[in-house]
Length: 163
Image (cartoon, rainbow, N blue to C red):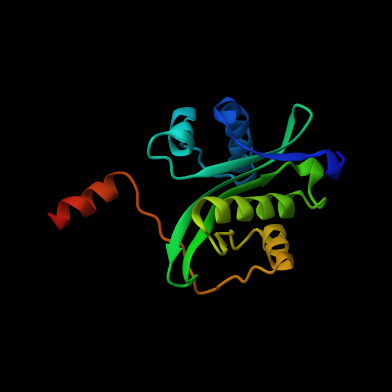
């Protein structure tokens, strides 16, 4: 892969299968569950209430990277920042600046769409290569910041208790 020939482009409706394949590859790499459907992704990206954006990095017909992100308002960031929920670079092209290029393109797209002024993301504590990559780019990991997640029946129970 020649870095200069890789094109980063905004995902359109016809690109959803390629985006899904990239997101599934990321889930496999991280040994994470994968719970979204192409319909879920399409609704988030293109529906009347769309709230996300995605980019793909391609050379020819092959996808080498993807980023999926949404705006997040945070007092810590001083307003809107881009929350990158998913960043994937094919193992065959890692250490060739594609991850950096994807994040830079996502930052520009976020600033254009939502006037974001920073990037926030989560990295697994045991993923040393990812942590080193983000540190090299200047990301600061807040070691006391733990991610909490509530879903499914637990959200329903929370809502029921609030009534």
